[in-house]
Length: 185
Image (cartoon, rainbow, N blue to C red; front, top):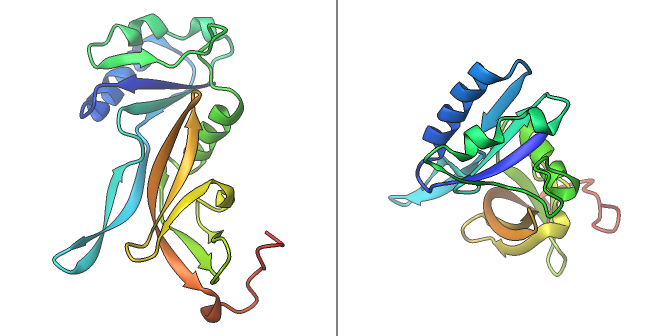
């Protein structure tokens, strides 16, 4: 099962450590608590430098290998001073489902760290993500910033949409041979 929680800004790592320590003491099943990060290129003193930045400030994800959601220590986690809330659906359940679950699994599959992807650019057409962890998110692209080598993707998490900027390497169609056409993607 996967869960998501909201915590105080700037306290994500502290909260991750507190939850990890709590779960070490209280559950027998395997678990993982992570604060998703992304690799970005930032321009400093005229040169691009690769750095790691939070993907979503204030949000942590938890993977727990338990079978019954009721056995998970939500109350103990919610009582932590740096936890704002554990995301919950209208039906009262906390385990992520649908798009939220797919998103959490995608982050987990990438070990909570999203590296740069390669994006194919053809004049007059939409961009196509050809390589890397963002492959398949073409339809979520809402902004392309070729100058700063970034794209903005829209994600839905718990019914709330968030726009997240990612650094990418742009590949232009004249530099790529045998690239799939966008109609094949």
